[in-house]
Structures are given as C-alpha cells and as structure tokens.
Length: 155
Length: 155
Image 1 (spheres, rainbow over the protein chains, first blue to last red):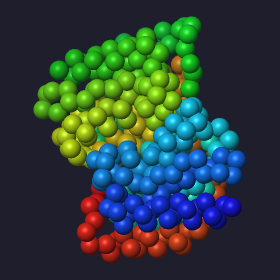
Image 2 (image 1 turned 180 degrees about the vertical axis):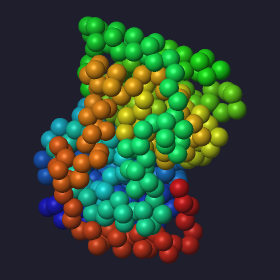
Image 3 (image 1 turned 120 degrees about the vertical axis):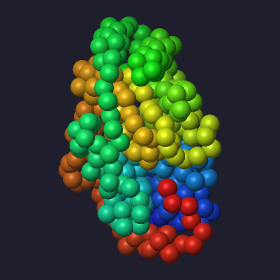
C-alpha cells in the first residue's frame, strides 16, 4: 500500500510537470487506506507561490473532512517537504509522512528548498530577506486578549 | 509609513480574532508605498490550516499582480512568521519583512510556532511526526527530466 500511494504521488508530479502547471511535485493524503485528496504543484498555472503539492492536497483534504486537522491521516509526497509545506503539515497534524526524493535532490534541480532550510535557522536580522521588528507591545496585547477570550477555538 | 502599515496589520489581527475567523494575526503587503493586499488568520472560519494571515495576503497580492513573485514588495505582519509563512515569504521573494510580536509571544498564547521551529531542524526520522523515505530513485528521475525540459518556467 505504501508503495502504491507514493507512486501515485510521483505520477501526479509527472502530470503537473507535463501540463506546465508547476514543478515536478505531487502529493496524496490517505485516511483509513483510502486517498481523500491529491495535489500537484501549481505555482505557475495559478500564479500562487504557496500552491505546492502538499499545500494543495492539505487544503483539499481539510475541505473534504470539514476540519482544519488531518488527524489519523498519512501524507505521501514525491519529495521531502520544503519548510513551508513541513510547517503546513505540522499545523494540520497528520499521523505520518512518507516522501521520495530529498531536499538535496530538489536543490540540484534548481529549487530553493535547501536554501530556505538554511535561512530559517538564522536569526531574523541576519537573513537574506531583511526582517525588522516594530510595535511589539501592541501585538502582544492582542495575545493577552486571546488568552482571556471565552468563545475561542484553539488550533 | 512603517508604523502605519504595521498598525494596519495589527488592526486586521484584532478584526479576525473578534470575528472568530482565527487567531489574532494580520498582514499587509505594500508596493510603492501602497497596500496591495491584506489578510487575517482564517484557519477556523475556512477550516484551512494554511490560512494564516501571511499566506492569505501573499495569495491575494500575487493574484493582484498576476505573478508568483512579490518583487519589490514589503510584508508587514503582526507576528514573526511561523515556518510555514516564512517559507511562503521566501518563495514569494519580497524585498523586506516587518513584524511586531515574536514567536515566543505566540507560543505563550498557545500557538505552535516555536515548537515547529524546533522540529524543522531535527533530522526527518527523529521528528514528532514520523517521516519515512521510499522510492527515491523514481522521484529523482523526474528531477532529471525537469532539468532537461525545454519549455519550463522556473520559480
């Protein structure tokens, strides 16, 4: 079963590349042995830098389940997730991830995954995209209100 | 101007929290001194774990510009971006990021940002969400095809 699902993810990667929708990346999300969502990279066709295969599939799966959580689901992706997609996966909280190619394989094909992994551990002020902090106290006040808020849904 | 834009991001954070659309996070994207897109966290109202303020705003800004790149844009966000959003920002390649609260402030309010930053640097096999590699060679073959592909758009 594992091989069948990862092969489907790779098939989707090929489909998206051949259709010029984006890079060669595909993803399927499985629950109880069934595929509940599929995705391929659509950065080019959608003009959307967030339309990576995993993000596309996660959004579809959550719509399918009517939930912002992928509890009990497995994610099969044709390549090790980039930091954006790994972050999305952590927010969705599936039970397991299967991947085929590595971030180094992606880097050799010209994708920035490995570069972004390196930037993410650098202190904000030292990154290639400059980051500057301001107005921290106003934003912190909002968090204090959130903590005290009665009718909130945590995620 | 910087303060005006970050205050608008914080205002959007408050709006989303008050409307129960999601956590208290807001973002604006600015080009040539004008706001071209705004977003607030909508994880709850959209059942979408990827609907963080920055992702919402990046998708809108790219639609507005008809491009998958935010060249020459500045991102103002009410909180230091989580790894998902920082990854999305790197893929969109704006020129600068301004943020108000920190990841530690977010963690104290119950959000997983800091936890995900810690997980991302751990080797895949040792993470809290287990990761397993299989079928690497099939996926690597796709990358070789991508490298040789004539009519491709790189991103």
